[in-house]
Length: 326
Ligand code: HPA
Ligand code: ZN
Image 1: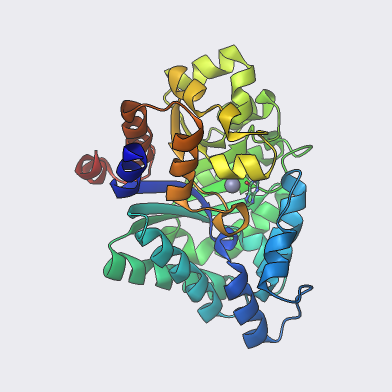
Image 2 (image 1 turned 180 degrees about the horizontal axis):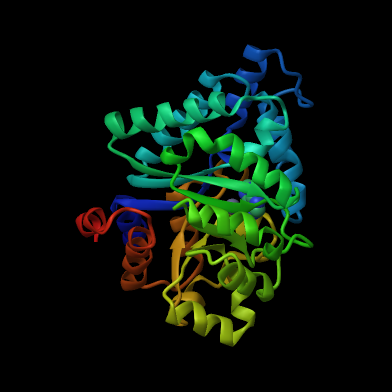
């Protein structure tokens, strides 16, 4: 109980958050009505009841369907501002959010529309709520590298306002290797690099992400634990793993939170962090994820402090800004 209170009270950073995954059913319905977009659900309860997933793909199907209600700049603003207001209550003071441009461009939404709405909310959030931010443009790995290059080209006028690129969507059968050239180009452009790896995919995908894509962080990384040499490489090179406990539970990456590998990760010297991934779909924001860990694992006060500190240390804040939080 006191550990939960401590976790709630500490200022925190969130490093793994898909802004489209913060679309709560209430806002989904409001935007559907505002934009005249049909939804295959009768009400908010029916949406929540549909959120039972047995793997990543079952979630992704509803995630892409849900975001179809996002149409105007104001929609993206409202989505992002709702997330910021929600996590301000969790004492999140820094957030690094991912967005999936291809999922919107494919539906005929202009890059300017989605980007302006998200960025305007982040600027207002920084002013009004004191939450600093970084922006991560994520490529969809179920699409081709050519499509990723196209998205990068479309994003060109905004790249100086984007901090990093990522890689997400269905992992099985979509190895990081296929995106080596587009990641190399992003590196040349001065963007920071991260990729989802080892959520459902094998340890080899984590190797590909660090060797082939040359990412600086790994999103998830759970299955890295199956390869002792990989664990050593990640620990030696101080890679940050952006772990998402409630996501892992909802997507059946773990069967029970009591079996969550978070403490094994810390004991193996890995720089693990606590994040919410897609909070509207997985049943919790950052503090809910801390609470779930504390309730199910024999976590110590020191380990809790380590997790919170890892969030700032693994962020893309400047060294000076990090000093302020560490
Ligand atoms: N994994 C892969 N792709 C995603 C996720 C995730 O957890 N959330 C949104 N896109
Ligand atoms: Zn994710």
